[in-house]
Image (cartoon, rainbow, N blue to C red):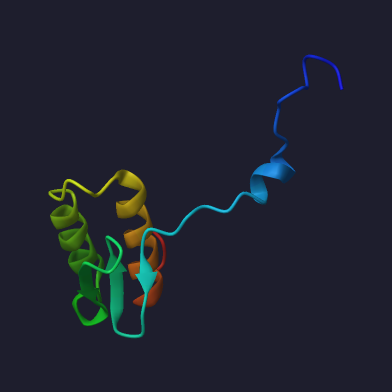
Length: 84
């Protein structure tokens, strides 16, 4: 391996990297912050409701953009909504 490619990562390698989940989906909702915060699926049935929760999550000091993105993706899928 030459110096230019040493330490580089291929796209195949990146596809195999496991991204940690910040949100665990349950039959009833979504657990965040290691189970300390719960959002019911019944309260995430529309884009409006999901956006409202996403805005509320932005006020939490322990929430980063990865958590918000994951919440929007999981809540949209659970509600049967297409990804915006």
